[in-house]
Length: 261
Image 1: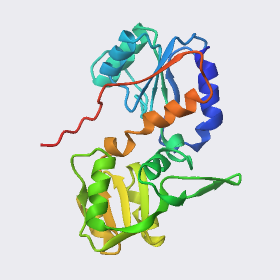
Image 2: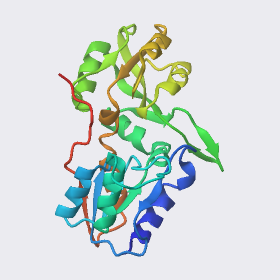
Image 3: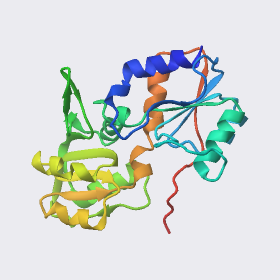
């Protein structure tokens, strides 16, 4: 199985055309003609992940976040990005990124969160209509029965395996309608409010963003890594449903750069 056979399959399922214009999805490092021995799935591609790929004899890393967002003018190992790219090239390891195109898929990253929270009647939060295909960031759905907001946050903390939830005042006694967006989703708060969500779950809200809740909705910031941690499972399912001829491994490296005391 060649690298390009895997990437073609992924791009048929999750088209590169779905990515945002600032993004850099696709094959970032490596020869598409190389034969794949095994695949390593990760949220971020770091030097530690490349070391793990070497140890596990994986010569294709599929990451959610691109290791390169903008052009590199020099590759001399002066920062963590260059060091990672150099190590991958030296060891003939390809790196593929499947980022905002997977975020924008109706059964993508945010849908995985919705699944974990048992949401029903789900639809895309911020739909972009492209050739009659409903794509876009975020998912909004409903719980089967309303739940006390304090209990909901407690359950959310457990399900999303986070040590910290930053949230606004609990202006809703019960939670029924829930909006979610994996990654940095503060810019979609207005969509969640307009659609009557009781709570909006995402990450990377700045201090002043929390004021925008205006007591109309609860904001719950669960952390960027935490909101996307199940993306590896999502990519694993895409691959295992279509390929059985090579090993697909989930990275055991915790790439979260944030710690909580």
